[in-house]
Image 1 (cartoon, protein in one colour):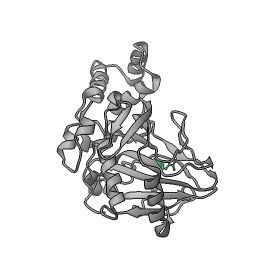
Image 2 (cartoon, helix red, strand yellow):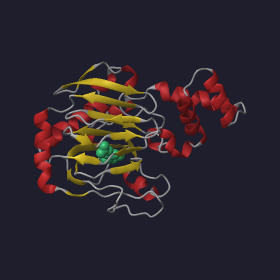
Image 3 (cartoon, protein in one colour):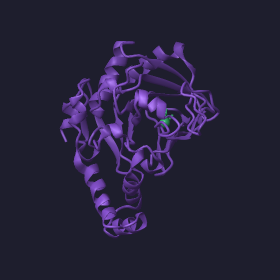
Image 4 (cartoon, protein in one colour):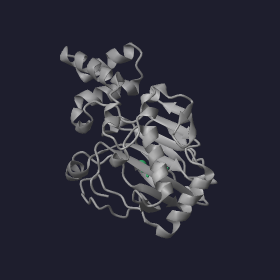
Length: 296
Ligand SMILES: O=C(O)CCC(=O)C(=O)O
Ligand SMILES: [Fe+2]
């Protein structure tokens, strides 16, 4: 679909342009079966008998039977690019990039050449003097919205506000161009460094819909992530998607994108940054929210 590459920028209609019906059609089909009195088990069997992948069936069922986990802000809209129609070469405005891998459940893709080597090096150099220990927001009912240090995330990071540099803005625009999501609906650029032994244990990127209700009501829910790899670590640091047994080996300049419009384990987006063996691992992360973020 051309829309993704044509509709860019901080204009809210960019989101409306992504009303694509694949997800809706899936939901409607499961709703229909449910309205005819089928329970989740029967629907799962029905879907698998007509060739659905087991995880796709579970996903669609969870979306209907656990509908409170779907971000209400999205109103059934697709998040980010229509991955079903990605051309192999992408026009990201100021740069071309190449699609290398596409996964259907969850919606995930790997893009090469998202950044040049020079851009990666400059971002690392700019971030280095600003690094602070990374924090996590716990999803276990102990609510600390400001985040806290944890053994499960042992990296350092620097956050860049929009306007921090031409480079930061150019990259954010590129992310916006790729995702079709306005920069106003993205968190600040986060540049993260792992040293040997550092890792980020298995987690979901979305905020816990119950434990962090206040945060979500004020600032919106996370719905998709784009990770940019700024270097090629010599050993380890693989990003692992545990539900689907996918391992992404970081390569300088490449990006992995994944969406989770449904904030539950059924999104199949549990992932981790494996411990680094030697050298350093550098990434930049972009978290998309379901609405504009007022506070930066
Ligand atoms: O370091 C990685 O490979 C994963 C990072 C990550 O999951 C995150 O920043 O949320
Ligand atoms: Fe993550």
